[in-house]
Each structure stands twice: as structure tokens, then as C-alpha cells.
Length: 114
Image (cartoon, rainbow, N blue to C red; front, top):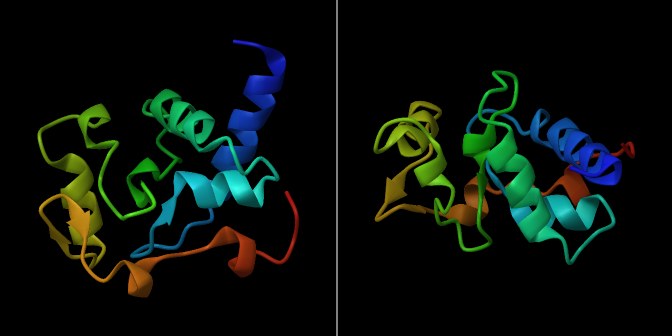
């Protein structure tokens, strides 16, 4: 992995650590906040690389439609869904119910730059 990717990944993790319980954000929203609007896929790669890090709530990052696209990277069949439901987020057919209610946009929620 290139050092610039490592730095980008750490910046992604800094944002993900700030997502409040019971809220979700998208790969694209994180990328936009970090000034790399076209790098949603790279945010996904960072999430894939974070599964051995207990302090990264990767389950709170979904695609722009609220679909649990990263669910296959979690142990067990429905762990991502179970973690979100334990935080009060309702899921139906692998998609967040009432995404607008649960969506946390780092671009508007965070005042300080990372």
C-alpha cells in the first residue's frame, strides 16, 4: 500500500470514528468531506481494511441509497445489520429504513477539518 493511501485511510477512520451511534453515512459523503469527492470506492477499501480495528464502527458506513453493501465483510451472515439494529436503525431487505432520519453528513455535521 502506498503511503498516501495509508494517510487517506487514516483520515477516513478519523471521520468514521465520529459517526454517532444510531446514525449512518455513505462512502461518498466521507470522500466529499475529505475533499476527494470521486473517491468513494477508496473509502470502501479503507472500510474493508478496518475489520481488525475495534475502534472503527465500519457498520455505520453504507452506500448512498442506504444499502448494506459492505455486509459480506463482517463475520456472520447478518452482523452488520444486527449492529445497526442494536443501535436503533431499522433495516428492511438490507436497506436502511428512513435513511434521511439516520443519515449523518460529515460535511455539515463536522465543524473542524481533519
